[in-house]
Structures are given as C-alpha cells and as structure tokens.
Image (spheres, helix red, strand yellow):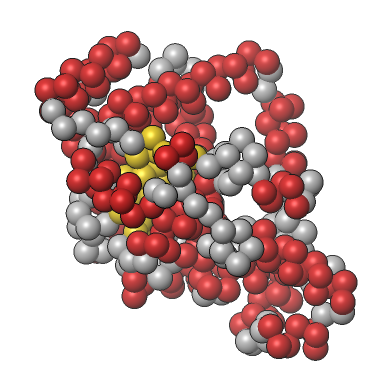
Length: 319
C-alpha cells in the first residue's frame, strides 16, 4: 500500500446523499475474514457478525440492495501467474492447523447458509475472484454503487460523478468512505491510474511483480507527469519491462472484458425469492435458532431482504 496521507474523514458517510437506489456490493471473503477474526472462537459467531454487519450497513447507508460476492475455487490469475497471492496462502497455511482450517471452512459454510436464509444475493463463479464479479456488477450498474472492502484494487472504480464509492473497514467497527480525492491523498494518483501504479511498482500483498528498476516513487512521478500512455511505453521501458508492465497490468486491472469476458449463469448465483413473508420469517428464524443466534430475529433480517431487487438482479445479470 502506498500511503500518502493516512487521515480519514468518517463524517463523509453522513455527508453523502445515499439512498435506497444505491447497490451495496460486499467483498465476501474480505468481510468474512474480518468477522472471523472477531467472532471465530464462537461456533456460529462469524455468521452472526456478517448478518449484524449488513444490518449496520442498512441503517447507515439507507439501502437494502445487497450483493455478496465470493472467490471461486479456481482463479484465472493463478493460471497466468503461479506466484499470484502465493505468500498470503503460505502464511495462512503456516498459521492454521488442520483443526483451524476445518473450523474456518465450517464457519464459511454456515455464514453462506444464513445469508441464503436471509435472502441475500450471493455470487460465486468458479474461475474468477470476487474482484472480477464486483467490477462486472459495478460497471453494469454504472452508478450508485457502494463497494464494501479494504482491498485497494477497488479504488480504481471510485467515481464521484457516478456516485461510486468504496466503504473501507479501518478497525474497531469503523468504516471510511473513499471519494476520488481520498484515493489521491492516500495513493498519490487518481482512481483510473491505480492499475498503472500497481503494475509498475508491484503489489507485494498479491505477489504482483513490478517493472524492474522502477519503484513506487518513480512510478508516482511518471504517472503524475502523464508519461504512462500506450504510445509512450517504448520511450520509457525496454522490451522486457514493457512485457512485465503489460502482464502485471492485466492482473490488477478490473473490469477489462478484452482479457477476461465474464458471464454469470444460474449456477453461479444464490437467489432466494420469498414471496410469502410468513414463510420467510419462519424459515429464517429456524436457521437463526439452529445457529443459536439470539441477538438477531427474523423480523430484523427482513430489513435487508429485497425481493424486487432480487428479481431485477436476475433479469439484468443472469444469462
């Protein structure tokens, strides 16, 4: 991460004219990891934390149009670059025992089961990361989208004129809403230049290699000077450096259908279509009881279920 200015303005959440037209897209594994860290010691704690988090977003963002996106088992980026996120996976494997992995996976299954019962749209495509699906949905809606994640890659999608923002967890239950100026203050470039920055300087958290002999400082200088254009690459990099830039740019650029065209099919989506509220309340309460969750009721969960949005999403995205 390239932190230029680590000052966050939490009052911006209240300042944005958010309304029930906004679509809230949640990076599933990103948020799951945060709640697992807090509640994972309890058998159904992470499922409770996740639903509690969505209810909190509903009250703060004034929208109940939720889509939760999950990583698929396979990954096209991994196919192209064996090192992609390898250090992160090794670190997790070294820290987790077999019992830890079993508990983690069981908690994930329970969380998804509860989300299904509550009626939240969930999308998982086996050869894609959640990043790809989130970008696809964001760009198809074009405007009025809030992305919930602390993954810096999503900063490239921030666009004030289209009311597209990133709501980023910053610890202790607090979130910061990122505008274009916040992206620039933290990273030193505007949102659309984030892929260029990561491709040149590299991204150690994802094992994305940078361009040899070009670090973050030089990358910032060139981007800010407007030197990184398609026609100017040969004047800056040699052939090997251009090859590395193009390869890394492909990995970090989101929503680039030229390289990876994505279609969502019925098998990729969990859609619950409760038309009878009494059935919804009974079924949801049964799962809450099964998970021994007493602090949330099915009546509260009803706040984050939106049948009209589910039908709209199906019509817009599912082939």
